[in-house]
Length: 177
Image (cartoon, rainbow, N blue to C red):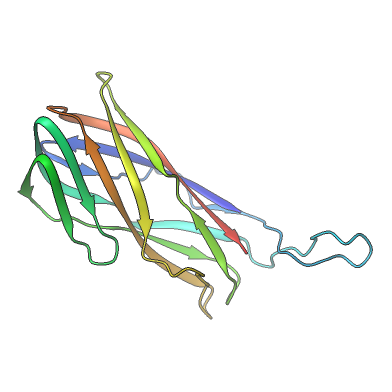
C-alpha cells in the first residue's frame, strides 16, 4: 500500500489551488493475495513497490463568493468547471489534478480517495472539498510499462463571503489488488 497526502491551498476570490507538499514520492512494499501452502494465509510479496507521484496540481480557477455561498465543481474526465449558488466565475484556467502510479507491470490496483476533506484558513474559517473522483475505470491496472496515470477532480463547498487562503491534506491510498 502506498499513501500520499497532498497539501491543499485555497485562495478564494483570487483562486483555488491544490498545492502538493514537497514530500518525496511515497512508496511501500505490499502483499498480494496468494495462499501460502503451509499456513493458507496471503504471503506473496509484490515484486515492485508502488510509487505515487503528483504530476499536475488541481486548480479550480478564480471565483468570487457572495453572501449565500455555493460550490465549484471540476470534472476529471472533461475538465469542465461548474459553479453553483452564489459563486461568480472570474475566469482563469481550471485544471484537473494528475497523478502517476508506478509499480508491477499489469497489476490491478485500487485507488482510495476520502469522501471529504476540510480545509482551514489562518482565521478559523473552513471550506470543504467533497466528491473527490477520478477518471479511472472500475478495475484500474498498471500498464505493461508498470505505469498508470489518472486525473481527479471534486467539489469545493464555500460558505458565504469566506475568502482567503485555506489549507488541508488529501490522503490518497493506492493498493495492489
